Image (cartoon, rainbow, N blue to C red; front, side, top):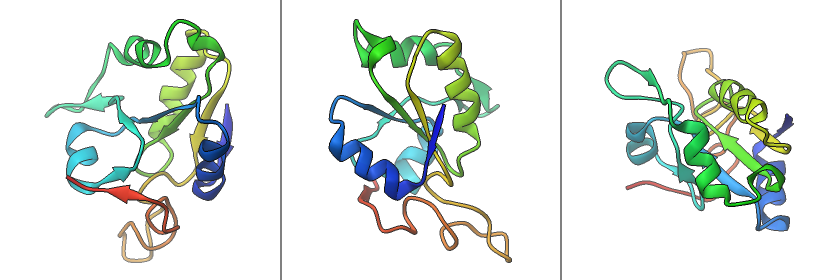
Length: 131
């Protein structure tokens, strides 16, 4: 698994339009906190009990298509931790090029235990939207 900063990821996605950009946060996070433009939501954990999505790998395979193992898969979550687990699951399933976005969408905690001020996709000023 490769690990790119948000800015490196954005450049990579511009240069590799075949890459599949997966936001693996929960549906609530994706919709209400916002998400990178062009990302597709496939939760790793979701629901009221924060349950592991047993269909995650299959859902990503479907998005990646017939030659899934050859397509780059870019994963983003809140802070860059969930994507490690999700990426390892994809690699075990045969994906050959998985990229983890370091610091995720909201970044690390600051001194006051808040996100969105130290690092991450939004702090770096990269394109995002909110529903």
